[in-house]
Structures are given as C-alpha cells and as structure tokens.
Amino acid sequence: MWRVAEGGIVVLTGAGISAESGLGTFRDPGGLWTRYRLEDVATPEGFARNPALVHEFYNARRAQARAARPNAAHAALARLERALGPALLIVTQNVDALHEAAGASRVLHMHGQLDGALCAACGHRWPAPEAMAIEDPCPACGSAATRPDVVWFGEYPAHMDEIGAALAGAELFVSIGTSGNVWPAAGFAAEARARGARTLELNLEPSDGANVFHEARHGPASQLVPAWVDEVLQTRQRPAPRPR
Ligand code: APR
Picture 1 (tube, helix red, strand yellow):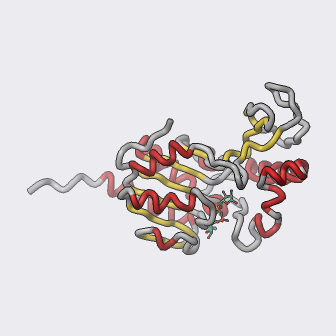
Picture 2 (cartoon, rainbow, N blue to C red):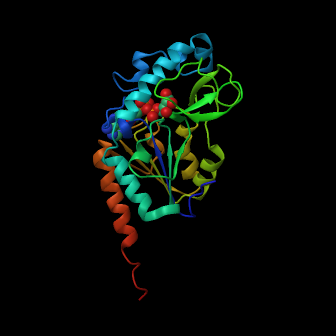
C-alpha cells in the first residue's frame, strides 16, 4: 500500500499528459472515441462479442505506447518524486508506461496497463507480449481467455482504497491532462477539496470539472507541469520565515 505522507501531493493524470508524446487522447477532435465505438473495444460486452477486434485495438495502442517517449511533463513529475518521495503519489488514468519511463515509481494505474495480460478465466496476470490474442494460453491455467489487463467501462477501477486514503490526507490535489469525464476519477478533486486540500487543474483547456478547482492553468502540459514543479520545489526549499 502506497500512502502519500500527511500533507502531501496527489497528482491525477489523463491522456492529455501523453498527448505531446504522440499518444492520442480520447475525446479531443480526432481522439480515439471519435474513431472507435468504446462499446466495441472498451467494455466486457464488446470483448465477449468480438475479442479479436478488442485485441487489435489494444495491440495497436501497445505498439504505439512502447514506441513513445516521455515528454517534459512526465520528466517534471519524476523530478518532483525524486525530491518529495512519499509526499507525492501519481494516480494515472493512462495505460501507457510513460511515467515509469521518465523515472517515476510511485504510480497507481487505476485503469490498468497495456503492458499487462490477464486471464479472464483464472485471474492470472503476466507481462503482455507484443501482440495478444484471446487464444494465447494462460501460463497458469492454460485457458484461451487472454485479455488486456486494462479496466473497461462497467468494471471497477484498480487501487481505489489506496487512492481514497491518499486523497484524505493530501494537502494539494493536481489534475493534469484529463477532461474530467469519467468517474470515479472525475470526483477526486471534489473529494480532496472536501477534505481540506487545495486543488489545481493543469490542462490544455477548462475540463468539465473546472469549477471544482481553486486554481486552473491552461496550456500544454509540457510547459505547465515543469513550471509548476519548479514553483513547488522553490517553495519547499525556501526556509520558513524566522519567528520575530
Ligand atoms: N496538455 C495538457 N492537456 C491536454 C493536452 C496537452 N498537450 N492535449 C489534450 N489535453 C487535454 C484535453 O483538453 C482534455 O481535457 O487532455 C484531456 C484529455 O481528455 P480525454 O481525451 O477525455 O482523456 P481522459 O480524461 O484521460 O479520459 C479518461 O476515459 O475512455 C476513458 O479509460 C479512458 O482513461 C481514459 C478516461
């Protein structure tokens, strides 16, 4: 269980943080959900109907994600983690591994990861091959029930207990590159604010939940995030004013 130290920072990231690494977002013009029906490729029902189409969708995203490089926003958050350690927790909705590729390790993937394979029959998990098919035999039980280890619509996100505990103790909640469309992530800012945290949105444009944040800055993550990390580190390094 990763907890964020009392008074720490919880950062939520979405597809927007990986946009400048060349990975598509979902709801922007040309986004994934404008090119695929999410009902067909991101639901258990879609997988039951046509597992080959679902694997084709995730195999393509896995190849693209593995070829992508982290951008300045991912690097800045890794720098912040090196400085703050347990006082920072990154919760990501993204299934790419760009936070880890930039050097971050305290990362919770609440929607799973493209680099994971899951047996729908026995629940066994193993590292995803380049391309996956339902017929791939499960290394544990041998079933031909292989699926991507990602959370689909209608399924319960991962790490929710850890995320709830982190939000309860956070001093600051920062949302980066997410439209605030999908629950429960869309409710994290209000939850943190209700527990006394300051809330900040760093996004290309106002998200659907923009009104919940104390402060919002709009622009590309590769510019906003490094500037914000610099601010945090300067503030935390500035010695507390001497008592008079
Ligand atoms: N810098 C910062 N923000 C950006 C950038 C950028 N370069 N490019 C796009 N954005 C913002 C957009 O303005 C938008 O608000 O990123 C957000 C992306 O929103 P979505 O496409 O809805 O992606 P996300 O919020 O991560 O979706 C949440 O929905 O379909 C599910 O599981 C999927 O995890 C995903 C979840």
